Length: 344
Ligand SMILES: [Fe+2]
Image (cartoon, rainbow, N blue to C red):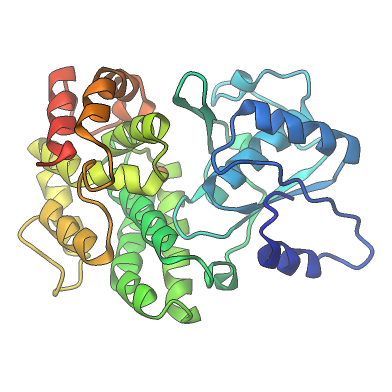
């Protein structure tokens, strides 16, 4: 089990069958790198669990996926976790994921993002075999989620739904999930922020976020994630905040050849939030809920930005999100989006 955060973990332990032995592994920073994961892996291998339960936000659940894979196959290298490589997992254990945020969708995705702090980058791993056996969506687990995290994780989920729907890998299955996910989140997020203790609306956003995760797991993400991962790695900003800063500008650029799809998604906004196009509706919502609209809003100084610009561009260009983005953007266009998103 990951994440020490007391109340949630107590809740999970309380529900384990009587007499079951459990051990908590929680020696992680918010976005663990491989070194931290390896530190915990040793204890997991000694304990020999038959179930691994990842409790937490996206990085905790991602870390539990990697620990699960490497506990199963200790001789394997981290980068053997790829979609094309049969791993033969589930010889020793099964994996459960219990999200304590409503956003990442990691509980129902085949992906795991791991930080490389030395190289200042985020590595994207994926395999159907690291998809959890069970995902438990319980709104009790997000009732105490602070406002800032509620916003940034909801923005992440909104980005998943939009990028999945317009990815070059979109399909009727991922479309249906994305449309419903977006509608659930957009119609309930304001009310969640006004009344954070309301289990019903929390539940709807929680389910919406998971559906958005399921959607992009069956399609793909795009350029807002490519830029967001770069920004998260360089400036250590929360993932949802990072991808959200780029989303409206990326939608505007991608509208060059996906305008019909973006217009359809704009209809998911409740009338009082809906503007003439999707990027304008997003900006209006983000302003209301407190999602930064630019890197400057997020506290990045002009000097920091100028110093890291080339690094951000090259990290974004090599991200998998660029491969399935609906518009094939050139390096110059990515630079232009970055500059625009710095803010004035
Ligand atoms: Fe994301």
